[in-house]
Image 1 (cartoon, rainbow, N blue to C red):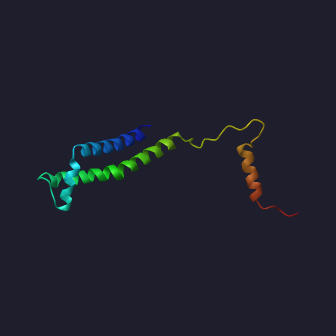
Image 2: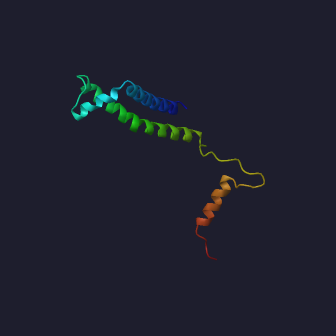
Image 3: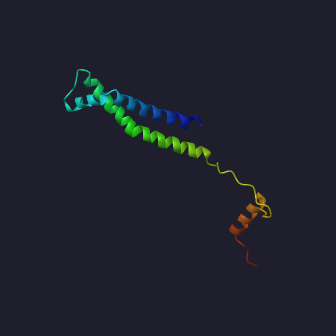
Length: 110
């Protein structure tokens, strides 16, 4: 179960980086996109923050959904046949094939 852990970790990394960028006040530099930069660095920091915000808002939830689905699918049984119940006789494979053929084969009229 390594892949779900990696996907959850990556989603947490994106969300954590977004939170750190917000706490550092980098959101103010997003005003550079509207043409009102706060400083010379706003031309780089603003679009980088917007890209980080989009990644946290769009990509992280998708990663969480994929990790959850992957973990649940790995826990689901693989379609192995269950053991026959006591008291119920199941025909052998040769008997099952013979009954299938007899129902399909044409019958001779006598």
